[in-house]
Length: 461
Ligand code: ZN
Image (cartoon, rainbow, N blue to C red; front, top):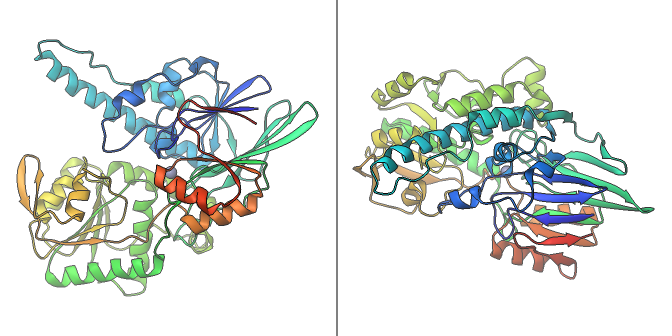
């Protein structure tokens, strides 16, 4: 059994690992490289293996940095089977189609610009909608948590609930080769226990080798309950001043988590009854509809609501605004509304319109509940910019700015350590982390045998 590393190595995006065993070539994730840097070249670069030679692609979850290059894999010749949980299939379809659409738009813009340049360049998108649809056609058997699936003689995989986003999984390989048995466990992205919607990550099975993420290998999270209280208080105070609350929101999981938390606040009378809530993101609306179709994916409190026939993501005064005209109409509202829109880091999408209409008002608030990379508009506002550029206009920052940190979807250092201890692994391979986080986590593992592969490395197990 051999593993090679083709993404998220000493880095947090572009997850892609290749297992070669029993004559089969099995890929675990095929994600997009993302971040503030220009990563087009990295995404377009050769995979480091022949796409047509891949027999199976296993997806741990539907985040773009784990499934975003699957359509490219198809475009370059992959015709094997994609295995994922039911929720991941639906969410990954949404994410891949959205990514294809954005790349097609980008390509059109590049082509227009390039036509005016002295040396016109190729404006073709990395992949298009058809590639994404074709990739979706490769979804085969659906994986259920705890149910072994045979990939080849002597090669069995089992998905375990990773508690990170709806449908997320860790994947165990059990391999019988030449009379000996080996167990290799891929963590996928691990969740943070005590989140509002999901169950905590399942107790991991014992394994000889773990290949694990280390996103927050160097820090501990703040607890969630005070963060929810802070959110409720910030909203109430803003409404008293007569302003709106603008929340830049990631479409998957964070948007649904916020709806649930707002619903809770209304039920407990911690939020004003007149509150209007706008989910102003077609992608987040579609994701919420998928979340509503998977009651099996949640922790006990949410499961109970579903059991009673109640929708955990619905509350009085909630509006889903899919159409552009509905979105533009929100601009006329000056107070009493919570406006959630993407993108989470304010690098594009409808959120920029809402910031333009609210950021300069001292009555308004902007609340950040997610990660903001360096160089993004979100980060500039968080770091205290007095004014920012939005659509070539200088906008004063007079709104109250809150950064609420308790909503992380990733396990922190203590949770990663506890998970690792339960696997009893003799050998540990760290991926999906920045260098400092990986080093800090490796130190915490003490004398354990730890490897930190670089992009393109191969490890024989
Ligand atoms: Zn993730």
